[in-house]
Image (cartoon, rainbow, N blue to C red; front, top):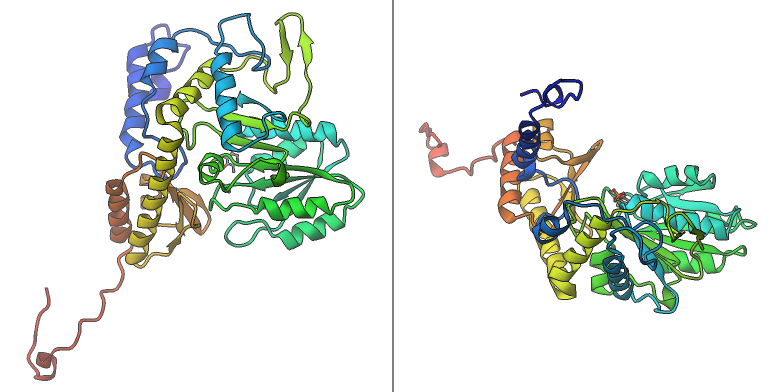
Length: 398
Ligand SMILES: Cc1ncc(COP(=O)(O)O)c(C=O)c1O
């Protein structure tokens, strides 16, 4: 069945069940070979979808608001509190909400920072997510790209030089905790120190879409007073694996945008979007509640171990692959097209990656390596000489 034809809404009769079944069938067919994008696939969300999936849950307004239409703000507040605790954010200086994803979280944080520093220049590394320069544009700000090294980490000497050239302007610096291609983690302590020397001051935001939760579980990424980080954004459908796009943004209360009370909704307009998906907040709450901190720590350890295994197996067949020590992401020379397509790898020119998200198994990695080896036959290794070679006898090898 041609799905686009079957789904065309200009027809008189549509076989709705057939269209939906085919969508699910298509996704199921490629699920076992989808290892290039960072969505965890180890959790069941049925408990939430069964109970909450058939009505509108609208968290319009601020998470602290109450009343109004059916909403899940009590779960949203629990998600924000859990996440802020995990990042060791001071309890007296924190605010946040459940977003539609990492991009909205970055926008909310950069909007707050820009409101505080209207003339700020926004510095971000060339390895930052593609949404960052777009958001700088949306905010009408001046963006300053900063060099990154070949493994994807910000070049702090270049950041220092770029800051020096713009001494008169406040600086909003976007560090990344888990860059999109290589999962590099920028050193927020070094950025904090450079910002502390910047005469016009500024704000440090961390885009931690993928790696924020795993690094916080290690205690390696904190938003305590010493960290000097003003805001952070994570994606909820990546490490936490919600089946709808979601995220959490955390902003220092002293930095955040104070919203207007809206008479029509009876809520305060503190967020980027108006209506907000209460189902996403419930799914995030469930994903956290089912595992707890220890469960999530174990998931991160397991994912990194699998990534280390993948590097060993891929390099063992003579293909170049590496990973950052904290990473679930395996970076490799781009495989031939048939392998890349079958395994839904993310590719940027000569470099590709696969990501060992929770739920990806050794069996899948082994099957990928088998395909890669088959698609890239190497010249057979020279056979060791035997006495027969020197005797003039003709020998055959099998
Ligand atoms: C570093 C980084 N930031 C932001 C995003 C955007 O997140 P989302 O897709 O949740 O909006 C991504 C997504 O891949 C990312 O890798």
